[in-house]
Image (cartoon, rainbow, N blue to C red):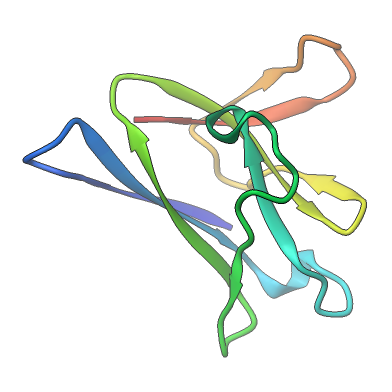
Length: 101
């Protein structure tokens, strides 16, 4: 998994590309990107499956902020393998990936 960032010169926006390797998903399940940038809506941002088997999606995020997120495949939640950092959830039951833009 990987994050890549492209900062726009004309707007305070960063295009963040989220990628998930095919080994993270079983049986071709759909994957969703879920985070505080979409109010943790489990269906708001589906990821696209590429021919290589990877899943990807690009999201425009306002700069100058940190965003917590996770991936959801079926009923399985998992984190990015290379986030900018992780933070414990307010519930203390797991950690969320964080991207800083």
